[in-house]
Image (cartoon, rainbow, N blue to C red; front, side):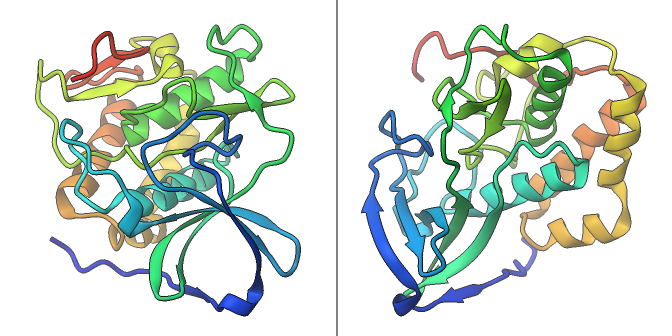
Length: 247
């Protein structure tokens, strides 16, 4: 495993004006999530979702290394930012009172996502679908994205970037209605040229310090597969809208 190069942004207690237990992994606080989440308001008035490493749920069926979800929240943001899709709220890795975790910008006026996808443009469906394909998101259920002005907002990305996949293995899945909508379809050229940005050396070096080697290699294999075949499809994964039965 690679040594993880963690960006630490220390926030001292006096800079935090308010802490609320929201009991949910979603920014809306509408549904209970498996990970402990808190809304933190800083002295400058900005609000964030704080998920500390120690409060993470360890999934027994996803191929996500234990206590590494906070890193994946950050990497999903970096990937989205590199692509220029602007779907993932600003996310940081911080230390608060000695505890490390992810801090994601709280989005006001965030509405529940449209499960039918009918309110979203083809462009937004392609962007969200490609993001979930690239990060191999195993948990984009209906409570893990929101809606602003008919645009999807992607939060709760911790169960992504798995470190293993295998053909016909039910655990090797991409759970995303958006990815299902574009699955096995030719990718428009404009997105292929954007995805090429993920292969730029400075970006590759930046994210390599946050992922174990297997997860990093699989991420690049998915990127290479998309660029080579120009189709939103991976032979080792299955795209599903939701789990028919909890494993």
